[in-house]
Amino acid sequence: MKESCFHVWFGMSRDALVSRLRSLADDLESLHEYDAGKAQPSVTINEWALAKRAVPCLIGIPTGHPKIEDGHALFSSSLFYLDEDRGIARSFSRWYRLGTRVDPEFWNKKYAGKS
Image 1 (spheres, rainbow, N blue to C red):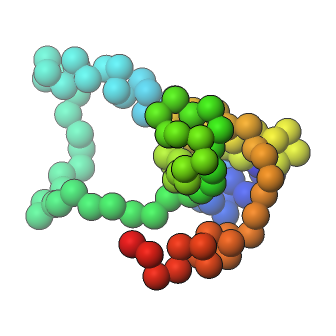
Image 2: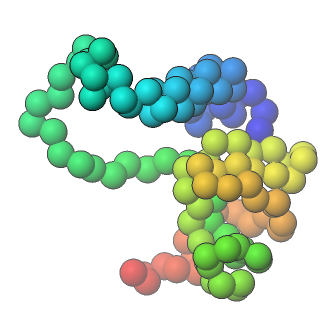
């Protein structure tokens, strides 16, 4: 993924994204500090609810996926890396080798009106 794409997709540089993801991993590994009362969030969120939002992902037909049968369409988990020149992508869950590319309109037409 070209550096400019990181700004468009994630609102930050590749290095900043890597730093944020490392910080997230460190925080998750340090959850015991919350139980011990050592660290508390400084921001409170009131009237909160769990929601969903759109994130970059891949859609396509996988081959060799551990959970999805070959030939069945998938939406990947959140996409964190895409390098068309190398032919690889990294979602939250796994690496993908990129095969043939189609225009997003291909999927819009294929599943138009289907739920």
